[in-house]
Amino acid sequence: MSGEDMAGSAGASATDIGVSLRREVDAMVRYILGNGTSMPADVIARLSILDGDAPPPLADLAKLHNQLASLVAPASPRTIRLLADDPFAGRFWSSFGPLPNIRRLLLAAIFFLACFIMASLSEHINATTIRQDIYTIDSEHLLHVLIFLMSAAGLGACFNALSTAYWFIQAGTYDPRLDSSYWIRIVLGIIAGLLISQLVPLGGPETLDAQGNPMGGSTATLGKPLLALLGGYSASMVNSVLQRLVETVQAMFKGGAADTAAANEAIARARADQRVEQHRLSMAGDLVALHQAIKDGAPADRLMELAGGLVKQVAPAHAASPPPPPASPSRGE
Image (cartoon, rainbow, N blue to C red; front, side, top):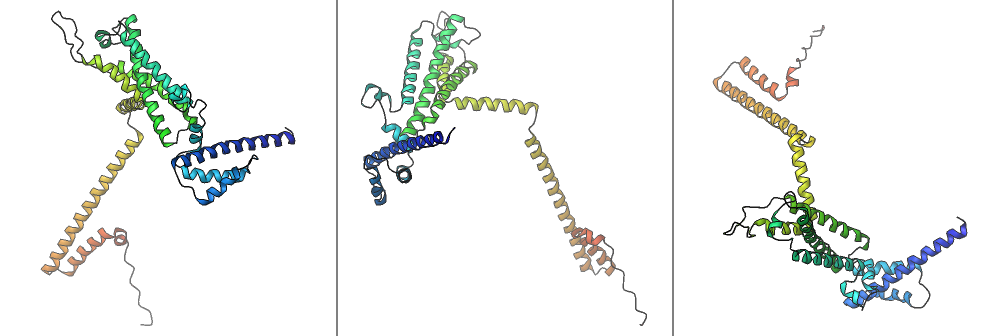
């Protein structure tokens, strides 16, 4: 790449940054003024760089952007600009939310709601088919039951995604770079809701009428759709349950290295405490014996023996070392 091309690319990049900063600055100014937030005098004075048709210097624009960002915190400038630059403002699609991803999430929620209603109206969905599991139900009924449960799980997943996005939008911290995470959460919620509704046993005896036909009062009749809804809403809970089951099975066959090390450390600590306690009891016994010997007027040899035993317990290395030899008398004496 030649020097002219590099210079042109750098100039275009600086222009794009300047345009982006200018849009965010305009959005933040409207946001601050609309909320009635007071601006410091230096910020108001710096707004003069926005006057005129010529683009302001990038450094001055960046300083103004930083000052305004501190005023709108914890809201982010990107979110404020996205909420302000709605291309569908004042039109029909604006009623579905201020952001494109929110509109898509709402359409997904409406789709799952329609599937749930249509599946509920099907003749294949009744108390008997809902209570049956995937091993006993025939294929024709199974397809309708799975669609019914997946639509319930999708409703729960969309409810969770929309409620999460709502709180981020309300706080002004919504990040469009994480749009895909909401759809990943919906897919995981559908899978989790379907798994938990089919694999978790529900039950109790069926309630039968006088002719012996099921009356639909079993717990599984309402329990399976409810589990699908809850599993879709909280896919992370299902993941935690599965992870806990895996850890439990692993612990049955193989103890963790950390648990083994902790157990060994506890055993060593208990043995050390036992030795210290025995040492204290032995010293107390020797002290009582020495006190009694002094009281009874025992000979000096006996007292030295008892005192030596105490010294050995307090400082065994010092007691074990032989005493220094006595100094030999000088020849001059």
